Amino acid sequence: MTAKKISLAEISTHIAGRLEGSPEIRITGLAELHLAQQGDLSFLISDADLSAAEQTKASAVLLPASLPPVSLPMIRVKDVSEAINTALELFAQPRQDPVGIHPQALVASDAVLAHDVSVGPYSVVESGSSIGAGSILQARCSVGRGCVIGEHCHLRQGVVVADGCRIGCGVMLGENVVIGSEGFGYRTRDGCHRQVPHLGAVRIGDDVEIGAGSCVARAKFGFTVIGDDTKIDSLVYIAHNVRVGEHCLIAAQAGIAGSARLGQRVVFGGQVGVRDHVAVGDGVTAGARTAIHHDVPAGSIVLGVPALERRQALREQAALRRLPELVSKVKKLQQRLDELESAADHS
Image 1 (tube, helix red, strand yellow):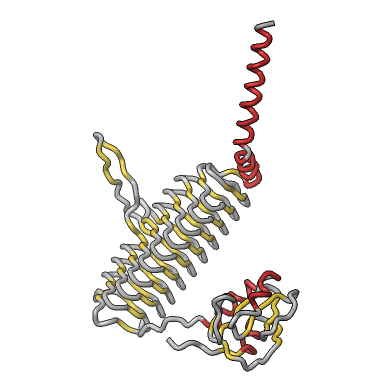
Image 2: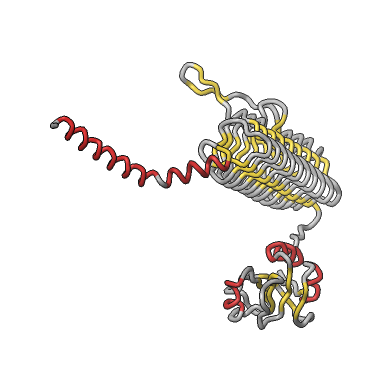
């Protein structure tokens, strides 16, 4: 893939920065100061980066308006992190998949595909399914019977959408995502575990993104639901009959047990766990590795195992760090008490 060459003037305009240097310099990408080469745009965050900026091989740098100038062409911005993210949009080169059905794909005769859908090699679309305009199925995707996939969706390599699942518009499913796998539900009879049938499906809203290797299980009945604009990281498991609200952010290795409910704009750090049938209110934030065992009111910030309100969790963590010192003091007090009791017995 040929690298884009974008002028500093165009970059500066795109990120609403103030250019100090030649507007004609061509940039081919972004890199950190110590890794940057000729043609790269790098960045400074604080005064600590000034010395590294004088040694970098970058062609230009981004820096906050408050920092002193450096010897390279510069674009001054209010927020460097935001400017980096915006600049990256200029260099992103969307994958161009050929429109149409690859000769090595299998599409059922009664499946309905819009005219500009792309179906890659070894992909399968089963009977009764439909795929909307502009959607892309890369290699080795599997769409089961009776599925609905909306417009402008992107299913990367190895995605599985099981029977009866419904995917909205503008959805991105990362490599090896599974939508509609059998839920984990068993009844124990005569000492043996018997699987409970899961006859429902999964419904995913518009503009949802789900990262590589994540799994959303089908419902026992009805739907497991992911709301509009929710973004789910890689290696996340969402169990049967869970309902995730709109605009949520769920980081890697989180696990949400059956029939849990998440409100809107919920944010989970990595490895957050949620017990079954728990309700998490709108706007809740849970720090990494938090274990949510009970309902959480809207707007709360929780940490720890089990989940506690942030200030309480931090107080307990601070107290725990002092525990060795407190144990030592208690031992000394106990020793002193023993000495006093012994002296009293001999008086």
